[in-house]
Structures are given as structure tokens and as C-alpha cells.
Image (cartoon, rainbow, N blue to C red; front, side, top):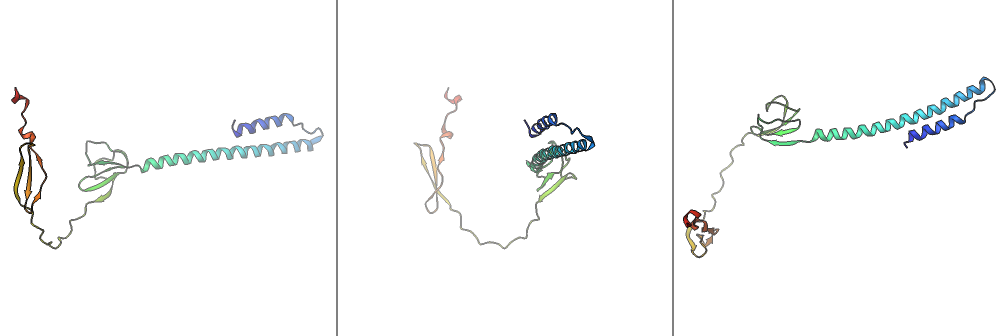
Length: 176
């Protein structure tokens, strides 16, 4: 049982045992005063318990709503054909925008907030030094047994070996 139910049962048990004073108005006044005091304490406990529960529920609900509000979905390039929701992020024309509400309409527009934009092209810098000359192809080493060819560049540098077997394989129509 809950604390409130336990308290109610206790008060009901007490109420059956109380016998009012038999002499005059003073006895009844004391009885009524004590009952009012007990009920007042009980109601204070009930309200405190209810407020504590309400507070916890409210905090939990607020946490969920804040988390939902902060979730952003990157949707890529804006398209008029797509439907967008609040906090969707799109990128039209070198800028990025976040939707301020569900179904925000065309972007950019009043229901989109710009997050970042492409800047202007910077000034041209000084010309750099001339780089080394690229190596020159001197010859190919061809291996007929494996159907591969390897380039050899100036300075004896070997390039990547090329597999040529597919060039010389027969298609199914050629074998029949």
C-alpha cells in the first residue's frame, strides 16, 4: 500500500476508538480541536506527497522534451520534394540551415535559421616555388605468363603492376 492509504487506515482506526468527553461543551471543544489538528496534519502529508510526485513527473517530462528539442537530423542538400521537421539541418547553396518548425517551407526562408555560410574567396597568395619534375615513363616490363605489365620510370622507379588478364580472356560467346 502507499503511504497515503496507510495513513487513511490509521485515521479510521483512531476514529473508532475516540470517545467524546461526556461533560459539557469543554469536552466537545477539546475533541473537535484534536480532530481538526489530526486532519490538518494528514492533509499536509497528503499534499506534500502529491506535490513531490507531481514535481518528479514534471522533471522527467521536461527532460524528455528538452532532449527531443535538441535532436538535430542532418538531411543533406535541400530539396523541395522532401518534407522537413523542426531541427532538420540542410545545405543549400554553400550554406547550412536548421528548420525552426515542422514543414518550414522553401529554404532559405522565414522558418529556417542559417547556421553557417560559405565565405568569400580569399586574396591570391604569392606564387610558390617550382616543384620537382615528374618522373618520365622509360619502359614497360611485360610478363606474358601472368599477363601483367609494370611501368618503369626515370631513376629506376617501378610503378604499380597492372593485371591484363581480363583483356585477353574469352567471352562465353567466343568459346562456342
